[in-house]
Image 1 (cartoon, rainbow, N blue to C red):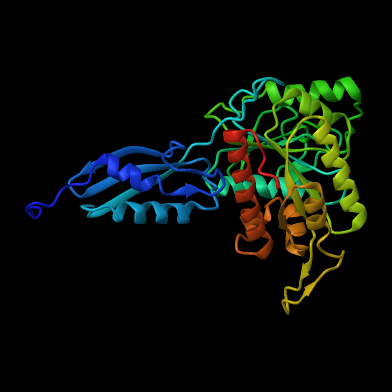
Image 2: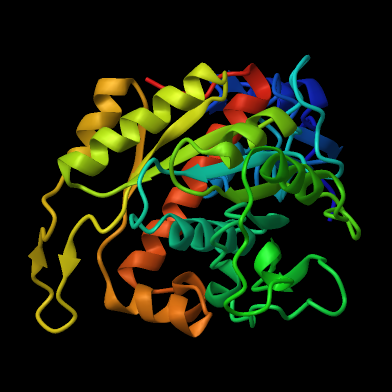
Length: 363
């Protein structure tokens, strides 16, 4: 079918000018200047291009696609728009500091200054949530003296005792834990140099990128300001830390101490998660704030950090961890799983900001 006589085809310049009116709200610049528009093709009134986001877990993915399509359709002469959404995670590579982990673009550490706040549960579910968003993800259990990640991903302690430690794919995530090579009830009595050596080997001597680079390596740190967090900060460039706490004032005070420690180590803190924030009755839907509520949000505001989300107290989360199937895998529609998916998007967004501008996006 021939085009109407005298009707001009849009130019590439006009298309790019239209797209440059669309701004990425996290990065604060237009999508053309950010290099997100690739492989632009204009044929008559047909326009096609690839829209490359900074993370597959972008929380604004649908909105940005819609705005880009609308901007192009408004250009005179455009009859159709074909947008292919894609993602390309930038590598966190500071100019100086610890040497990068080969094949790992970004390291995200999950930390707390107090045990019993559900940090490992948060780490596992965030890793799986990032993978469900389409990212390539690894999970490292850095609690060398008390590893519990094997149970949470459904693997027997000591499952690699005879073969040697290697990453294992579980729920779309490459998982490593020293618990894979420790037989049940065997205690690891390590301090100082041994902890540092163990952390170094886990980071730099395992084939994390044997079948392609990882977008994110989530590290479950042991609680407190012990040797492992200090060694981790010295051995690898951490893109950002996520602090996990519960609503009680004592837990929030401990979270503040963890923030202070990482600031002294010049490691960015992305924000705070309030775990066990409230109990949602599975029978009547009534919300009960068992441990109080809002303490983490107030601490984040006081410390100038982002508040990343509230994870409800849910018996299914505990049961899924004991069963070795993370809640985001076992019950993806549950309130807790939905929170983890949302928090994963927010963390990915913070990592993108860090990759572009070297800042965490804190308030």
